[in-house]
Image (tube, rainbow, N blue to C red; front, side, top):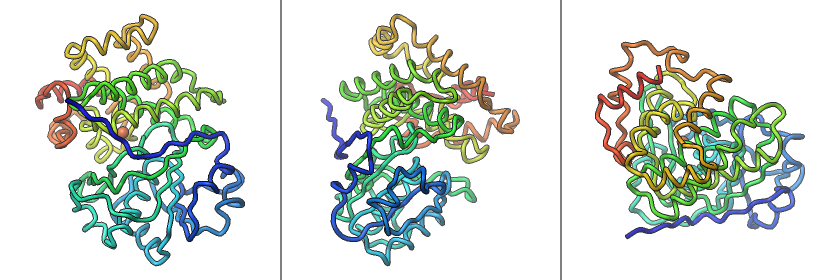
Length: 367
Ligand SMILES: [Fe+2]
């Protein structure tokens, strides 16, 4: 028995400025955007459909509870009918939490993070999300991540009220993405797709979507070089969308679980932190899903996916720091990193149960 559902309406467009006015409800709105979002790169939005809309652009990477609280404090007095989020995962996650805060009339981030997923989706302002990276899939999921950097904890809220109402994909919105961010985002999407495949919650729909994402990334990641061809951006954005739809239903698994302390303790960018364990986790999981492995081999024109994955990771590793040592890890950090790798609700989705010794071996391979 299985079920697949995702309530987000998807629009794909070559021209956000023309599409947006038809999607925005009447009434007041607010814009959450990444810090550098301004004309002329903003695709004419700020001088067009978003003219005069209050903008909050103080959201940093991996936002802390305090930063999300500032965003909530910004939006509450405005009582918007709609919220538009334009950015990567951190901006989208923040906007999701702000919408939920307004919907629940819950002003405090600490109270918000205590909501449970069983509560129904409350009505609130319409939330539209435009991803500007081809990686996080945050525009398609019901969870948000907040980083308590001082306490060394990753806080997560899973709630149906976190789903955006509308996701708008426009490849042009990703054209300005710097290459290192492009690699990290693409590897994050690859991790989402693979984690959806080696997942206890996988179903035929998520498998199809995830396989399509893996194929698109395998064909396009090595074309990430300045200047990035526009069709490569479009393919990677589509891959990110497919992967997002897949893992929106399965959740992630061991690679993400292992990544969290790497980001919190060592500052490894999320996509890289996830990708560091993929080759080892494929080796561990693939024997338990031979039909999926064979399907990937066919999709890749006969190339074994273990070889394809090593090729992709080598390509990325030649262009950016890709080992734990490069991010300042020392051998005596390993025990702590292993201990903090077991996130409930993530690690337990993995097809194969991993022991602390298994995780240690995975991390040693990434050293
Ligand atoms: Fe991710």
